[in-house]
Image (cartoon, rainbow, N blue to C red):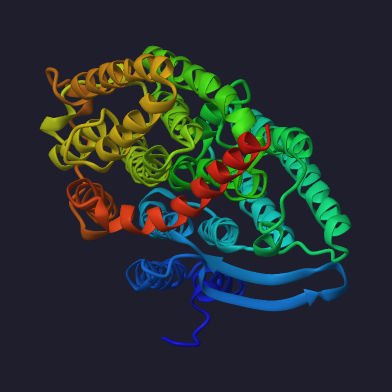
Length: 503
């Protein structure tokens, strides 16, 4: 595939499907669904190609595409992926591919518009993970967030108006701070070199003054941290999860939350390494709030979507802890957990949505003994719960273990505390599994039907297979991720060494 613009194909296939869908009649439901499946299949196929074709020995940015856009301002359509980006592109491809099938079953009205906004959103996500130009990075970042407003506001459940408004305000507010940091970097880099550019690969070669890095890193951390979500800016997230339709919840928890962490890694840490050295110890403390507050509140929630929503905030705390280590094993674990958590939460929200579509309730204590009527869904829910609890053999275990090993070298006290968060996770996950599926069956739920058709079962089978494959053979991702982590950690530690040598 030499010379083929693979990254553009991955990103633009969903966008092209959006344009085609505009000319399709609303009544042509099979055609609408077929177009959505075809577009996401193309993205998934090429995402898997770049995973296996990525040259690990060479490393760096590969599959690069660059077209000058506004030369006088130093803006270009510049795409490329390193090991970290590849993992995120593959994650996004799996989540949107399975999400299309979940919407196939769950969305009953205004189907065409739903798929248009869903595919528009994922085009923005692909753009963020592949952009090497700060302007296009920010443009795609906004494109990934804005469709959430109609997706939740139109197809969401109860309290959707409040959820959409709070989500939009929080994320827009955070995005403004990220933009201020980007513009500051642009003008400062231009003053240093006399050549203004938004090219991350060029800016990354510069060494900004230490105090400048420390203060500009903060708005970047805050701006992208809102989307992670980093405490104390996390309250919007579970509400958004609960109100969103199933496929949107899958993308929200599975992918959008990773945009914030990726922004911190790619821009804040990548361009401001001394700022990372200065502020990451603070993140190592704040992440404990994520882990324990999210976990404890999840344990008290009766609504299963709220439970998974707060659980997601808790798990992202582990990602932040891995990032804060600034060492190879911790950073590798953080990126791998971003992938594993994305697949796991996509599975969780898809399963909860399936039950809700039939029972019209998500309250865990309303159910009992559903395994009798829904054995396939019960098994899938059990796998999801075990993955969330860190059971060996599933992807989450490997990533969390790497984070704990890496974090113990740098923050032993925080690591010991964070480990207890696993007990909290296992408590609410196993309790929900027991209450919903394995207690005595109730006659009012005898009408519920299991997932039996290909379309119903296929997305769950795909997501479960990914969790097991990565769990049993993590090297399939770690070897690629490591090629992106090593130069980043070397750059940060190299700055530290120079700084110490000059003291």
